[in-house]
Length: 131
Image 1 (cartoon, one colour):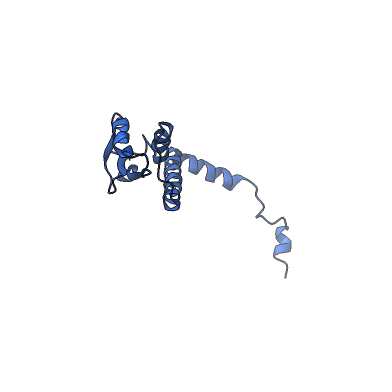
Image 2 (image 1 turned 135 degrees about the vertical axis):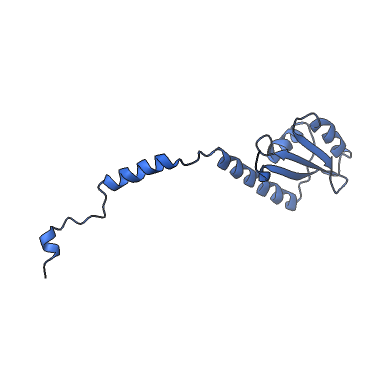
């Protein structure tokens, strides 16, 4: 079972012109596997739900732009998109990062303990005890 934070629900807002873009986007994206679509809270928006391992908002929006859809480009929407793109990119990168294995970590610790590093004192023992 996948963690629930991998399931994303995002709103895609379209420009007012040309009208009917949200309906056309439903027809276009409706054929994709594991992608849930529903009408957004505004007439010109669409809510998509997807697994982050399969899709990203940036990928979906880029596909729509390639098909000549016009997304809303207000400053607020641009900021929201940039934040979502960044968060999803980081989350996907973290999912691909290898887990630290305890055995490999113990080997590193043992090797470090036997390695000469700069925190030892070269002063002879008899000089350290000098009073």
